[in-house]
Amino acid sequence: MTGVRVRFAPSPTGPLHMGGVRTALFNYLFAKKNNGSFILRIEDTDQNRYVKGAEEYILKSLQWCGIIPDEGQGYGGDYAPYRQSERKEIYQKYIQQLIDDDKAYYAFDTPEELEKLRAQSEAKGETFTYNYRNRRQLKSSLNLSKEEVQKLLNAEVPHVIRFKVPAGRELKLMDLIRGKVTFDTSTLDDKVLMKNDGLPTYHLANIVDDHTMKISHVIRGEEWLPSLPLHYLMYEAFGWDAPQFAHLPLILKPEGKGKLSKRDGDKHGFPVFPLEWKTEEGVINGYRETGYLPEAFINMLAFLGWNPGTEQEIFSLEELTKAFTLDKVSKSGARFNPDKAVWFNHQYIQKTDNQTLTEDFQEILKEKGIDTNDDFDFQVVSLLKERANFIIDLWEQGSFFYQTPTSYDAKGLKKVWKSDTLEILNKFRTKEIIPFEAERIQAEIKNFVNENEIGFGKIMMPLRMALVGSLQGPDIPILMDMLGKEEVLKRINSFISFGENQ
Image (cartoon, rainbow, N blue to C red; front, side, top):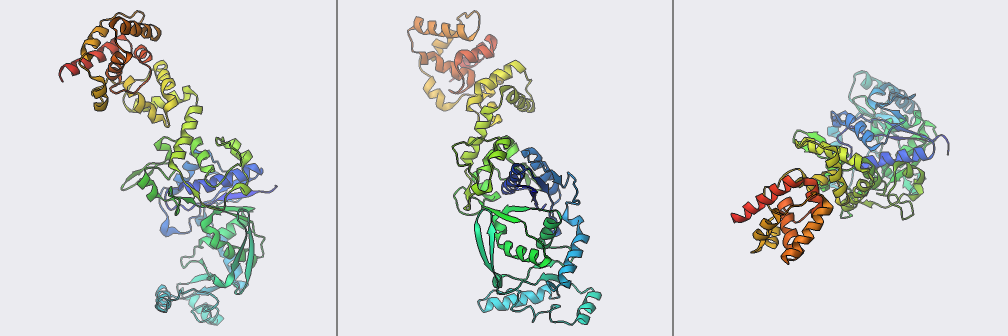
């Protein structure tokens, strides 16, 4: 396939939802698979919903994910500007073309007048629609003389420009994911294309930009499917060839019903944004801050609505590019599974080399005011990596390597504390172990058990409680070797003192 140009066109109205990231990802993969271009365009024509910092957030999110545009806002290119608010003059030219060709018209109805008509329709159990049935009875240039229209325009009377939807047509359109979709134009309303502030609505700006930027395929969310007939009719009105369209399935709540939202993340305790988002109320954590690796996040997103048709689940971005095709994207919604997201991150943690993990882990240590030691920290990571889903797990599962326990797990104490526990620990702490290394420690513990005719649990469980503060952790000989003789004796003595005071 040649000449492929796709775009991701988010609105800067808040943090980028993971569904938006998936749309960007699928566009990116399609472009790279077909040796095409991936463009980032910022659709900020709705200034009432503009949120400061949102555009920068979009750029940073894509960078963290590794979804790098070939051109667009922040990257430059031959079709700049890529921010719609800077393209106002371009839209004026094209809206005038539609008016001159009788494909669009001025509408001078006030919001109050329209609201009254809606209320009247509702009272009759009907829905008010501004379309071919009533547009010639309303205050529009379709039933006003040219002189009257010009007079209103000269007086700067507030108005909008609406698209003149042709009635009574059946549109049979193709969607690259859903196949043939049919629409009756009589059910459509005459959408506003230009607002009274002189800025275009999404519909006009979207069509003009896609055409002038030579977009070949529009890959967007399912929520835009109802706009497809309008957009097709607008391409037709301009006399342009329409791009090919593909509408991605929704990402659904974990329960499977309804679109995934921030509220679902709050309810179930998982992020829905790639990066943290700061508000006046506080900070909303993103996947990055929760501890997800970008590669795991992207891999997880790819499987929300797409499947390679094989048993393989772990894909690098490069592998996704080779495997991705739109015909393997599902028509039905994709249910988000938080546990599966964690599983993906666990797989990538295991794939990450220990040295890289150590460097990331050391950042956590520094935050906690703990001095780092490359060799020791590397050993900790190597021991705990297998059970870690996130890098922070290395701390949560191994903080005892750096901090002497100050309390002991109550449930574990009931299993550990027996009438002879103090006596056994007092005997063990006097034992000479030279050299104080894992292999020798293992042998001496075995000798101690045999000499005192006790089970291994009699010494191993109290030792673990003394050294860790709970009954979790790595093999005791390895743990003792890493902590060193002085620290081991210190912790055993503290545990004995604790026991003597109970």
